[in-house]
Amino acid sequence: MHDQKRAELKLVNQYIISFIGLKEGDHEFEFLFDQKFFDEHDLLQAKSGNIVANISLAKKTNMLSLTARLKGNLNIQCDRCLEYFEYPVHSQNELVVKFGENSEESTDEIWIIDPNAHELDMEQYLYECMSLSLPIQRIHFDNERGETGCDPDMLDKLEQHSSLDIKEEIDPRWNALKKLFNDIN
Picture 1 (cartoon, rainbow, N blue to C red):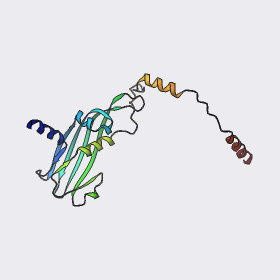
Picture 2: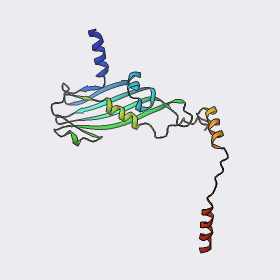
Picture 3: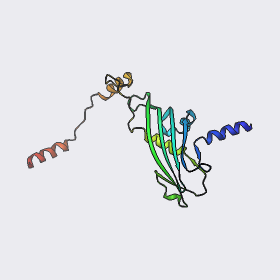
Picture 4: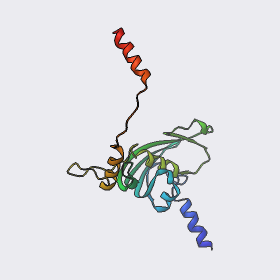
């Protein structure tokens, strides 16, 4: 039972950087994102993925400077055909961590943490970096011949439903307004 609790604790803490024992200077950290991460972060809308985050941390006496580089693939759903596809992720994000009492002054690029803190939980930050690396509209890439990678059956169904003849009845009052406008001009 004790080993199981240790394993669960390790999973919970796998995105934490403990900086208290680090000397001033540059340090490197690497985080891997497994299926458990994608299951817990369903708002990312990625079914799975293979992402590696490399963190470069520069420790100074009064602050920490971090560069987070994410590289890999996410399995996301196409907005057009609803099929899942591999989307390449390449991003680089900068973060400055300062020590102070007023953590309300923190922003997306600058964190203010308690001077007595000894670690950084990077999970939410890396999740946000991953989210921001995705495009707003997620559509299959075109292949080498310029053809879409979307499911052709789904595209046929979309075409059938979008090309239905829709007859709009025009309110007769618009015709009276158009006649009035033409008479003025």
